[in-house]
Every structure is written in C-alpha cells, then in structure tokens.
Picture (tube, rainbow, N blue to C red):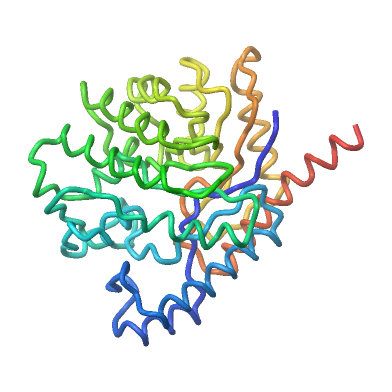
Amino acid sequence: MERIATTPGLYPLPDDAKDALSDLKGHQKHDLVSGDEGPEIEGVYDDVRERLVAVQRDAGLDRVVEGQARWDDMLAHPLTVHENVETGGIVRYYDNNNFYRDPVVEGDLTFSGDLAADLEAAADLTDDLQAVVPGPYSLADLATDDHYGDDAEFLAAVAEFLADEVAAFPDVETVFLLEPSLVTNPPGDGEDERASEAVDAVAAAVDDADVVAHTYWGALDEKVHAHLLDADVDAVGYDLVTDHEANVHNVAEYGTKDSVALGVVDGQNTLVESPDTVRERVDWFRDAVPDAVDFETAYLTANTGLFYLPVNRFEEKLAALGAATAADEAEEVTA
C-alpha cells in the first residue's frame, strides 16, 4: 500500500498577509470581497501562494495544494465570487466558531474559471499539484437557491458548474472533493443517490488525475456511504480523528474503493501529532479492516482544512505528515 502525504488545503493566512489585506480592503478578513482584486491585492495572494507551496515542499508532502488563501468563505468560495451570486449575511460555518458569507444564487451558474486561475499559478511552482474543490453536495448545502427553485435541479446545476470548472484545470496529480456536508447534513432517501450522481458528474470531468471524495467531521450514514461508493471516484476519505470506530465499521462492513484517504491529523486542534502517531493511526486502520481488503494507495491527510490553526502549528502538522511517509519510504529501502 503506497502512502501519500497530503492535505485538504484551506490553509491559514500568515499574520503579515492578513494585516496587508485588511489594510488594502478596508475591513476584517471574513468581510473581504474576493474575485475582482486589484493588482496590489493579487500581489499579496501571489506571495502567500509561493510561501504556502514552499512550506509544503519543505515538509516533504507528496502532493502540494495551492493553499486556498483567497477562500475567505472557505468551501463556499466558488459561489461567493460568481457574478450571478449575491453574498448574503454572515452565517456559522458548520459547527465551528468561524463564519462565511451566505452565497445566494440568483442566476445561472455559468463558467467562472476562478479555481483554474489559481491552479495555473500554482502549477508554475510545483510538479506534484493537487486540486482542492468543494464537493457538489456540500457546496449546494452551504448556499441559498433563489433561482433554480428545486433542490434536485439546484444540486444538478452546482454539479454541472463544478464539472465545468474542473475541466479547465491544468494538469494535476490528484483532485480532492471536500464533502463534509454528507456527514453533517446527510441526504435523505432519494437525495442520497442524487448526491452520489453529483459527485460522479464532477469526477467525470477530471482529466487523468485521481479523484478523492473526502468526508469529515464524523462518519457517513451507512446508506449514504453505499451510494457514495457508486460514484466513479478513486478513493473515499475517512475521518479517523473525529470518529474512527464508525468509519472503520463502514469500510469493514460495506467495503470501499481501491484507495482511501485517511484523516489522521486533527485540522482544528493545536496539539501536534508526531510522525509515529500518524503512522500508528494508519497501521491501526489497516489492521482493523478485513485482510481481504487490499488498498492500492492511502492518502495520509488532515481530517479537515487547516484554516483554524495558528500558522506555526499548521506548519508543524505538515511536517509530521511528510515525516511519516518519509519514514515508510526509508523502511522500504532497508527492508
């Protein structure tokens, strides 16, 4: 089983960049308007992107993300910068003491190209690029629909929008579709199948890269898990930090894809895991599932985005992930 160190992105902004952006935009970070920045603001984000890529390279990560420094509204970002979306009031982001602006969809979700532009810039900095994209179910769940008028039609429209965005990406090694809402607000009967079809539609637009549907903040309901396995993704993510027993139960009882992503580092807690702890959690998972389950790849990752952490703790957690897979590689060489 190949072990690949990576993250789901959503990195914290360095303090000096926060201060510079606050001065340039005139208000606090969670109120900043993204999408049409002037050259000075773009320059700050370019500098941050270079720093975030360098941190990942220094940590020895096998996959490098763009960092999502511009995602002031976190997973809602692709909608909050869209021309046919009005950014509404501040709402709580899942169960955290963080907030985002409610994206209110008021017109057709046409192609934007915002995600691809950031990835194009990151592609000049690394050959091991991993894209980070909100999953269609989560993005629809975080938004308000004032245009399509039907939940199923809206989910399909969000999936089509994301598929068009993904199709414009430069060459990447991996695409992480982040789907926490499948856990925190699980779809009901009928909707669970549509959610899987939406993930499948986005994955189908990915050209020559592995697709990971990464879920977190708990474990999937059994039926939701079964439907997600029907989607044509290469791996499903399991949050071993929040609920390791229920996630192992799903895999042991119902199987999974040929590869998995394992949330083995806490993206919200400042306690830094050691490389040995990371490896032990992976080994525990491997021992807990049936011997007949043979994984091609395990993506070792934080369970959530790392936006919530102080910058120094964020960097230390990246280093732990990188060191964990480096130790595995060293063992293979000496075996």
